[in-house]
Image (tube, rainbow, N blue to C red):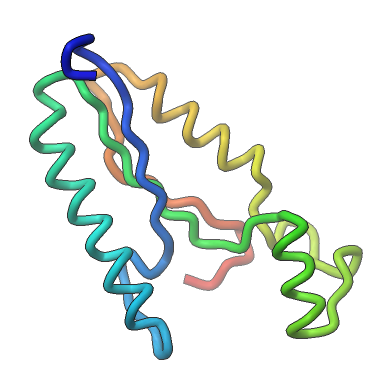
Length: 120
């Protein structure tokens, strides 16, 4: 990207990027570190026309893997999951595309995505 003089680097964070929770010490420390790395890279590479973005996904992702986990953990079938309680992959893709297309005079460094029903 440096030889081309442009580019976008994305980091995917989680709620753990900004607060730790009981039982998630290892995960939180890794996500905190990832966030710090993204900030440092943004400060270093932004002036070189490399856009560095940290996206926090504060939700379960509406996917087959999550459906299976919910069934195993709570006995909930995919059809019983409340509408809009999981974030669709298309919504995540739109957020990444939005950040990628931004003009240099209005770059987003950090963006968080969550369903409207998510408690935060």
